[in-house]
Length: 171
Image (cartoon, one colour):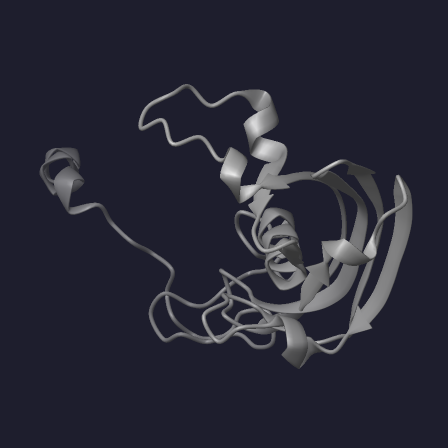
């Protein structure tokens, strides 16, 4: 989905639209979009510079990093993104990244890729370690049983082989 910037001539305009999961998602994503995506923002125009301030809401399906079960993760991400024409992109090979650079993107052909904007916000909102719940017990290291839903008879005892020599001294 592309935002046609030639349609916005006022200093401030509003954009709101609901997208279906298939319109936004990609097969290469580490998540699955499982609810409609609500995108709403104000467009601030200053000649050929644009600033989009708004939020994106949806639900993603992630895989728990402990029990490997899928779970739903709500997204309600606010953003404030500046867009400059791609002609202003610096061609310098080496330069220090400044704070403003992190919130600046570039557009070409008078269009902003809204799909890329939404996917970027999803990735920024993802947790470092996805957990279905804080007290997730994970999987048994021996048999692979999901310890959240059942128990197993495996002995969770593990002895460090590096300490075997010390164990011999004890006897």
